[in-house]
Length: 306
Image 1: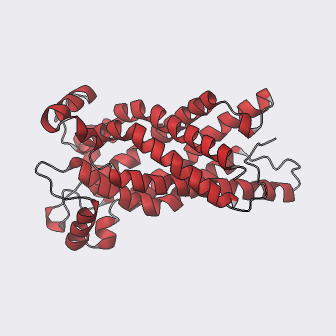
Image 2: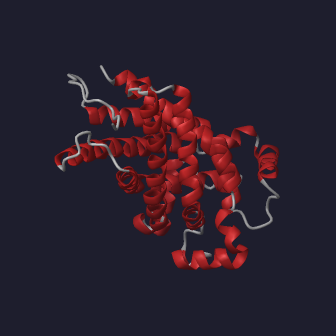
Image 3: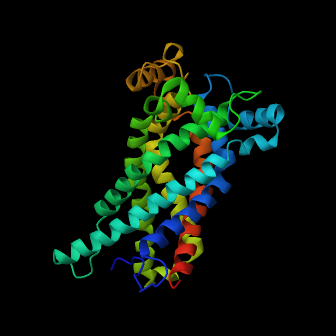
């Protein structure tokens, strides 16, 4: 039987509100754990070929030239933005899981057990919903992470103002939105499918309830979910990052658009150009995503009877 979060009567918070709050806590944990390696990923993705010899060289030069606190440059934006993004992801996923359970029961399935396809679809829809926030949040963050010294922007608000002034709202702040949609739909589909498949296996094989899921197993499943996301959606993230770090003024841009960015990336580096910066992403992923799911499950468990 598919074990989902129960829906007890609650005089204070609805189940949806609990899901969103738990997701926010998971998002904060993700940023605090993963931000330093995210800096390395972005620098390796967006710098010209040959700038760094690898992840260690990139880290050493950041410390030498900018100091150790540079690894948390632009943290305020992801701390607020990722918290919002993850809350949307989990809120939508949990709502869709409940919807699919009821739909399956109405179709004659006594347990309402979700198929792998339904887990994937729930994650994909959650990813698309999240994209409307994730796109601009990541754009602002990546501008702050890659700006030179002295800085071009005084902070996230000034960054938004300059982008909007020079390039407009949609074409500026929402630059790279199409690859963001692609990454989020497929990536989040694989993310939640991987996590739920592993969790449901554990619950069934050990006859456990969701509240009895060991924290160490949630960490393991979360780490694997991160790999499921990035190993399948990384090329879309590369294109998104390149478009979001391109010049704001149209006449100064390196890429004419999405397809031109794909062509230039392949022309310059071949297939490996779509996987630059993957190593720090794979190093970061198990820690950041393990923290995300452990924090979510912990918060959801403790909010159950609030």
